[in-house]
Length: 103
Image (cartoon, rainbow, N blue to C red; front, top):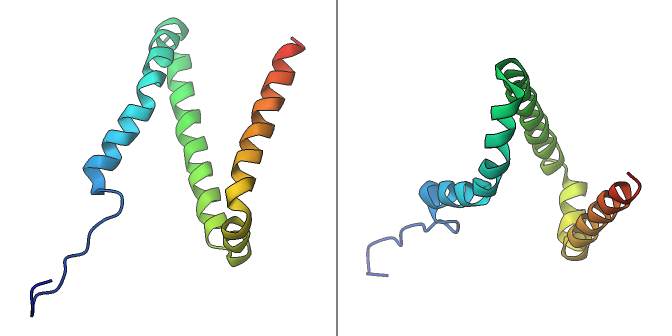
């Protein structure tokens, strides 16, 4: 710090360009799935798929906003998030594997 000059705030995540880059990189594998799917289902079903997807993204965002504004939920995640998040992902994976085994 230079005397008399404030230290500029630095963003932990690197700002919007880096966030957009990570989002695109994480979604690149989806392109390989969705491109053939949209090609085969036709325009009407494609439009329905896009509308349903957009609505459900809005629902997830609203749920995240609601959960993130409750102090009890925030406290639980701060205390138990280190082990709770992996356990939730493992349970989801186990359920998916169990359901696919019985088809």
